[in-house]
Length: 275
Image (tube, rainbow, N blue to C red):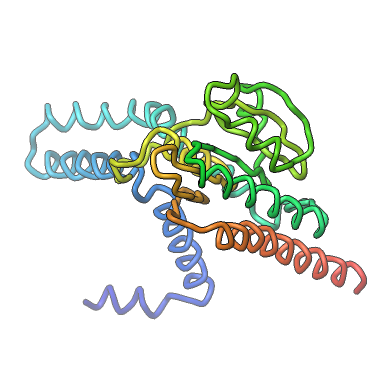
């Protein structure tokens, strides 16, 4: 008890700051791996660590030797197993406003046009129960996705979007990727979500839409081929059963928030430079 009191007396302000930073980092790491395959793997690692310590206490030398050597080799294996999660974490850090200079570099009128064209095309496809998958790129580049499809590089228009997703056409069975005010490619392949808790009723189209938002900050508009229901995916989360007006507001707000964050950051930086 006395030792604990001595430790508490020696804790200074910088020790508290240090602990707060570590707690914040662990919290962010947990939020990144929550409801992913990594969460289950970490539970398994904790069980192995506890078993290693217990075998040491109980003097089970053979088991302890095996577990310790397994943990040593396991550090290399972890880098391979956690590769998707590590990539996701690094991309998350790279998207922070402190390291990103350009966020949603689109003029206000171009944003309005993008929202209107995507919204109206989605509404038309929904009424006709034509499946669609529209990826709107933001900060994270999606060149690896674009390269899997057919290049288009055409201006965003409702007519072109509707025509791409008409059934039995060459490009209908894939995703469209939009960058700024251009349709970069169609018929693109997207990575499927690795979230084990996703609703089993959702098909490949919804799983692909969620998958790309787990690896980037893109917005994905999804139209169900069976029901015509409109959904939107962002940051690994799916919002379903939207109407066209709500869809437009969602996309517009997403770009507006990013633009405001960009403006505040650079305004602050300019003020600091002027001082």
